[in-house]
Image (cartoon, rainbow, N blue to C red; front, side):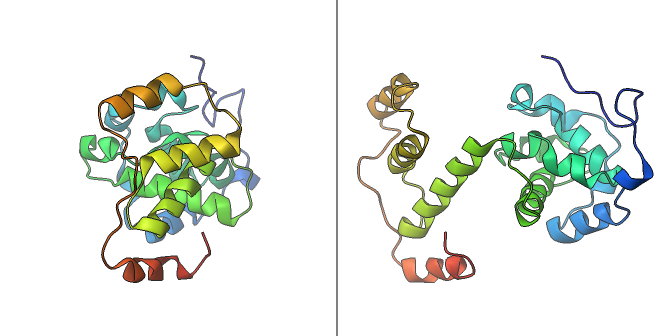
Length: 192
């Protein structure tokens, strides 16, 4: 897989106008973890199960943040491909919560109206949130069906769905938490 040239090379030079000086501090404030602690050992990238689907690795995203390259960080696909599994964070010798940084960058990209590089992933996340709002937990079968309806792609991975049903990994009926009203308070800010 070809990787894009990182900032600072002759093919992708950094200019002064590209730099947002307080970007790393803002990411630290919002994520609760310091990207500046990273010394780029690549443990996060080497451990990431989704690295091959990303345009740049998690440590490269952290580097963009450190350099103040806000626009480049918010426009990369890596922040959208990240599923928040915390493998990167558990591998990090500096205990940086890289998943929190990726989540913060996604939120910032949405707030700034930046075009989502991986729109299907955003649609999938929206369906997960809707399921959490309805039931207090994810009903995987409904999430997948609603996602497929929105995408208008019914049969591309039906074999996986059938295998999950056969192994009882998909519940036909959703289970609901007892105090769903308490959970719905989280969703008051924005109607999801």
